[in-house]
Length: 253
Image (cartoon, rainbow, N blue to C red):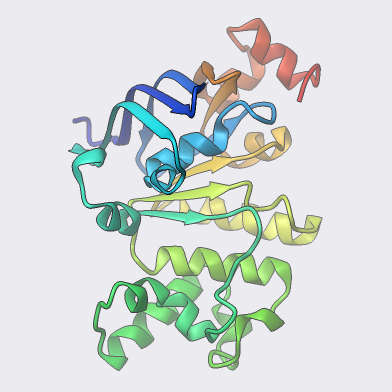
């Protein structure tokens, strides 16, 4: 497998009950790049990223055909727990664990998987992950407080730190700024530009301007089909498909 490709998706078809949600998706996700997944509501964006960390398996009546290779390994033959360690996920609304301190939130993946850490190791991981999420300086004196006193934007960065603490190969972001104000959104966008130097990012966004600002590659989904996929600059300036052009010009969303 090409070392520039962290995730290869081949002939992915997903159905829920009898509805065909994703139709024969083929795309490569590139190492240390940000890939945006765009398209109107209900086109399969979130389903696609849930298949990448096998969260679709938690929904009844889902069937998946096709292949995904993560760093050359068949993702559907791996232990789901290993997959979710290697593929972190951050959701639309910030969801720090309410009963845990900021410190515990960051190492929650280790706690929940019964992975024993020495105090010095967990201290190091917490500082590293919070620093990567551009939050350390803001919370270093409040590590043992519950995370719920933080602002929405800080809570979302805490969730990013929690995902990063497991040192994933891929970080999935499902509309990570849709619940945030413009200032917090700008902070997360800056963070994405920094993070992609060390982790490959796949991000669902409704925000066309955001995709153009932070992503290197963009996939446009429509009615479950991958209409177009390529370098963001190219797709935004000279789309090959009329449906992409119409979406980018705001004809449907």
